[in-house]
Image (cartoon, rainbow, N blue to C red):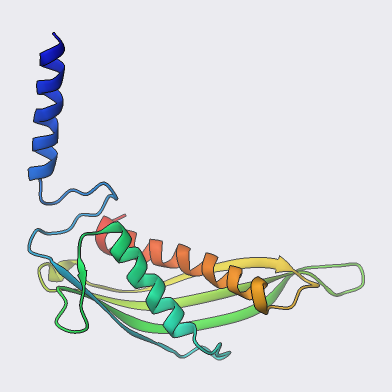
Amino acid sequence: MKYIKYIYILGLLVLVSNCGFYSFTGASISPDTKTFQVNRFENNSLLVEPGLEVTFRNTMIAILENQTNLNNVNSNGDIVYEGEITEYRISPTTATAQNTAAQNRLTISVKVHFYDKNDPEAEFDQRFSFFHDYEGTAQLSGAVKDTAIEEIFERITQDIFNASLAKW
């Protein structure tokens, strides 16, 4: 009986490892897809935060490297991500009795063009957006700004990954 359990587990592992379209991150990647490319995302928002496009590109590369076995290339990638940062906006979300902001919100939006050489029907142009709320008395600088941008980009890049490779 003990050996049947091991044979069952071994058979299951062989089955999963031979399936080219499955990954433990939920990605559905063609076996022909070996590389990805993340082009520069131009910062075209009205309020320009210096270096934001580099931070976004690096975050996008990191999520693809961490959640797939694809290799990052600078040109001729099997899948390509490019686009622009379209919004970087700070707005009050709640007010105090003294008519000052009790809480502010940083919103960042990114328009993404996704191309797939092996599956042209999977290609899309889509806008992704997320926000981070912070205290109205705090300035959006230093650690507050770094935390906000990191949280927003983690969410946006995961949403992009899900839309392009996990098909969620």
